[in-house]
Length: 298
Image 1 (cartoon, rainbow, N blue to C red):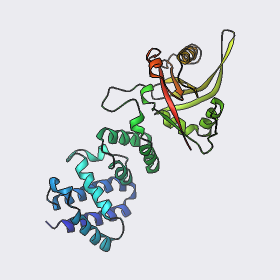
Image 2: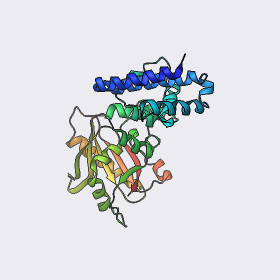
Image 3: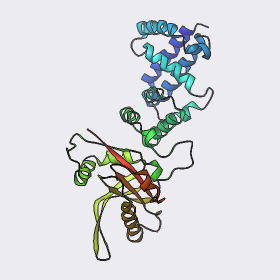
Image 4: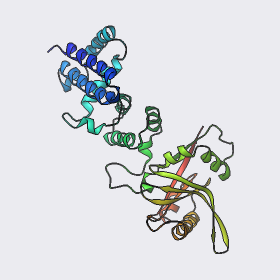
C-alpha cells in the first residue's frame, strides 16, 4: 500500500467534506484524523515502532504542507498518530467523542491519565465548554482538585467541589477580609459557580434570616439543579474552626424548614476557609457539610 497517497487522499476528502457539509465537520474531522493516525502507525511498522518513527512523519509533513498547504505540520501528524494509539480500536469513537472538535481532542491527548481524559471529555459534552475554557481548566488541574473521581462510586454534590477553590481577580487587595473576599466572588459569580462544580445556580448573597430573636446572614445561598438541593456557602478568611460546622448546620436546618420545597432534597453546606486543620476537622465532620480552601489568583 502507498501509505502517503492514502493519507493525502483522506485529508483531501475531509477538506472537501468540510466545505460542502460544514454542520458535521467535527465528526468527519475526527474520523479522518483517526484514519490518518492508523495509516501512520501502519506505515511506521506497527504500534511497537510507531512511537519512534518520527522521521517518516517529518517526511510526510513536508510533502503534505507543500502539496495541500498549512495544517499538517509534524506536531499535528503526531497528534493524529497518538489519537489512534490512545482510543480503542474498532470502538464507537463517534459516540465517545460526540460534540468534541479536533481542537478539543488535540488538547485532551496531552493528558496521560485515562480517568482524567474521560473527566474532561464528559464535561465538554455535558457543559459544552469551548477549547479556551478547556485549556484553562486543565491548566488549573481541575481534575486533580475534585473530590470525586470517575473510578469511584456515584458523586454527591459536595464531592464535586474542588480543593482548593480558585478565585480569580485582577483586583486582589493587600489585606483580604471576608468583605473583600465576598466582593471578589461577586465580581465573577459565573466563574465562582463553575469552579464549585456542575449545576450550581446563584440565589442570593448575605441572605437575611431570623432564628428566634437573633438575626443572621448566609454568605451565599445557591441551588444545585443536578442534585435538586439548596447549598449554603460560608466564606472564612481564617483557618477552619470547629464552631463553623455548628453555624452552617444551623443555616442548613433553617433552609430545610423555611425555604426548601418538599420536592427538594436536603440542603447541604460548604465552608470555604483560608486553611484547614486536619486534626480539628477529623472530629467535626458532617456528611452534609463539605470543607475546602480557597486560592486567590490575580
